Structures are given as structure tokens and as C-alpha cells.
Amino acid sequence: MATKPTYHILVCASFRAKGEPKGMCHQKGSIGLSQYLEQEILDRGLDCLLTTTSCLKQCEQGPILVVHPNNWWYRGVDSEEAIDEILDALEDGSPAEGRLLFPA
Image (cartoon, rainbow, N blue to C red; front, top):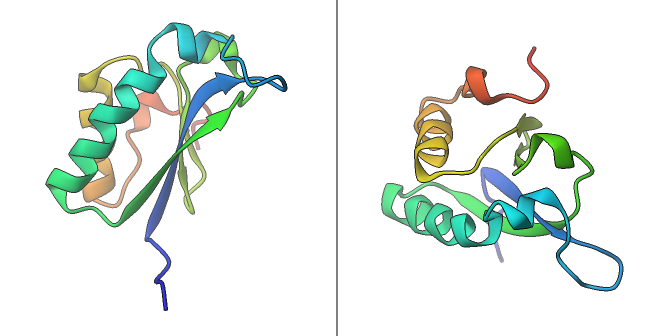
């Protein structure tokens, strides 16, 4: 039987109804960065499932990354440094406060 991962990370890939990536997240490299994110998850041994998504409707704040079950929405995830900051905080069990789209 499969086990549920601790975290599910969603990365906006801007795909629209016809399957075309059009939004800001795609234009700012979210798909390429998801490859770096996947490798970092593996290298750090994090129990995470990574999924790219259709548009998350936050284009002006993109690229967007969401961590579940915590419901932490991150904005401006456009670099390896941003991903490292988010994963460093995740390893500590806390959000990367400065990147949250919806701060507590």
C-alpha cells in the first residue's frame, strides 16, 4: 500500500484550458525551476510529492508555489535561492515568512 507524503508541493505551470502555458509563472521559468525543486527534494530526503498545475490565478504574484497540507502559498518563486529559502524553512517545519503570498 502506498503511503501519503508529508507534503504536497504545487508549482504553477500556467496551463490553460487548451493545454497551453500562457501565464506569468510559465514565462518566469516555473517549469524549469520545478526540475531544480525536484532534485532538492530528493537531495534533502524530504517526504514531498511535487506536482505542476494549471493556472493558480495569482499571475501578478508569480511564480506561485503552494505547500500542502499547510496551505502555505508562496509568491515570486523565480530563482533557486527562493526555492532554497522555502525548503530550508520546510525542513524546520515553518513557512518562509518573507515569501508568503497570504501572511498569517
